Length: 462
Image (tube, rainbow, N blue to C red; front, side, top):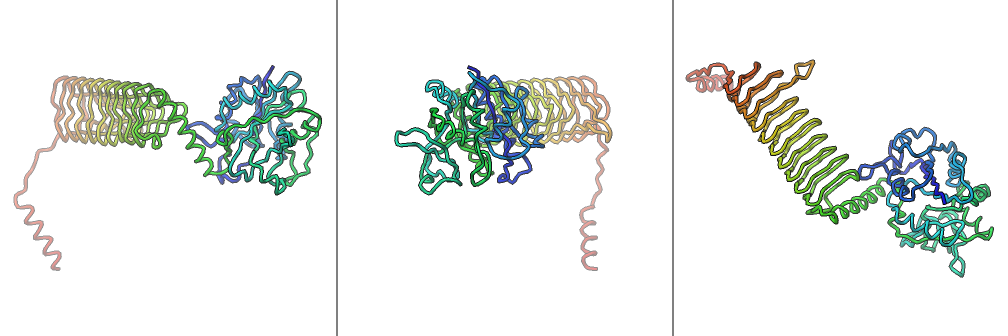
């Protein structure tokens, strides 16, 4: 039996009040539509069609290569959108067609597999997901007969007062018999409040033709749709809880899971400790024993084992084993801290490397630099890497000691074991083991303070 799938992503999403199409809004680092496609992937569909509206370039750009795009040029309802998909995908006897909306990112593979299993076991013409909810307002209601069999689905706007009291809602997720769905879709009309072709009408058409319809009740959470920014935030919170719960079950410690934000792509080893205020995004990986936070933002960054990072902003960087970062550190793309190195308070690095055991403990800017093993960078040191036209590189040798408030004007190389005097502006290479000092002679002017005070008092008197 071949499973084929249609994802309905042609809605305008006007209630989001956003410049972005609804289904490309990100949840834990992934577009909303990708969460649905990932859940669907567990069914291993032979073919997947995503239906979009005209001009949906941003939506198409987020889709994986294995899906096919169909354009619904007129917004005429979910039934019409499904017919548009079948214009580019052949479905016939032996096929099972799964149709689901792109704005239900909490839907899981488990729920879809259960729905598919019931469909196959009962030999139904159609099976869909439903849920009992406390407030069914706005949802389509599942109408059953006296024997508890599904007879139809009625949209909220078209429901009678009695039907609106029904608490079982339609989740908009279906599997249809491939041999029957095409003909049933062709029989849908537009006699409803919105003048559209409703996909749920296929249910009543199949019932009238004598076929069996099944509904699999799942949780309200699974079927939560996103139509506004507040709903997006609510769904994002659930996804965050799921991600954090899974990581804790895998051995990651979190002091306060509600204040930890982890993207779906992030990789963590057992034994990682996460403190409040941590944000892990993109292709970030953290090895066992490392502590992140309080307060850290890491994107596309690799962290080795037993590292300590706190109050730091890190993008596209690499942190080695037992390295230390923070507090109040900014590591920009290309920053590398090798094993045992340290970037301390108010240090910024860009396209620079601290080799094994090297330290910049506080108040430094290291840009386009290579700092050798066990070297020490004094407070206030700056690599002057930009001449107004091009960037240049600074190399500091193994074991070198850079005095506080040193300006290293690139391109420049400091030799192994060399020293620079505090307050120096180093513009020339320094030999191994040498001390380089660049200062003007200190001059003292006796009585200067008194004379300046007298001038100030005379000016006030005038």
